[in-house]
Amino acid sequence: MSTDDLGTFLTARRAALRPQDVGLPPTPHRKVDGLRREEVAQLAAISVDYYTRLEQGRVQASAAVLATLARALRLDEDQQTYLYAVAGKNDARPRRRRPVQKVRPAMMRLLSQLTETPAVVLGKRLDILAWNSAAVALYADFGRLPVARRNYIRLLFDHPAIRGLHAEWQHDAREAVAALRMEAVADPGDPELAQLVGDLSVQDADFRTWWAEHHVSTGNYGTKHYDHPTVGRLTLDCDLWTSPDGPAQRLMVLTAAVGSPSYDALRALVGSAC
Image (cartoon, rainbow, N blue to C red; front, side, top):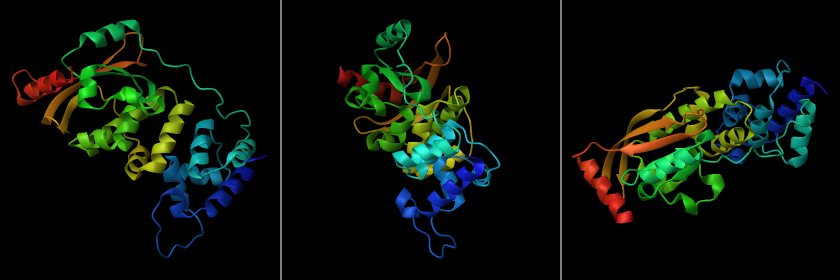
């Protein structure tokens, strides 16, 4: 098989799909059948130029890109097998999940001692690994969510209550996407990251746009504004502390200036949850 076979297959698959098949709005007076190249690139969170070169056989696709293309083009199991075969990546599809992330004991002790301020341990891909009761009072009971959904950026986009909690959602979500971009640099071949990006790219137009912008940020600190249904407006400082054994785990802590209205409101919120 050759890169020409891959390009022919990609062209055929996008021609077989309509915008509404992949969650895109239909547009009048289309000059081509099926999806445009730029629409596939948007859904797969890759550049139009890169996707064009894939169809033209001028570049090889990585396993991560193939995974996002498979989701973007709604390929079934047989079509995915063929996709990897023509790309020369028969064994590239991830069959095993990465080792389960475990919170370091010292991080857990620190989390348990933070009783008056919301705190969350974030792992790779901004997965939510652990949290305290104050974080539950502020956000949601993460323990009631399926493990696969316990991801900060996924909840920011698809959990209505958490999305509505952020008074400046667009700013916060865009910064979270930029932070996820930084995560991708550390492990570009991570299949679970590719799945997360692919899922959100299909589900949310804002995510597709911001991911394609390639804006990056460590997101280590900042100010967040919340509209909480119980205590109203909260203005909290958000700081992320990196584990000393590497960047795989970070502690996110939200605090308010002592004596401020947000400090009093946060104390009332946390106290009511005890």
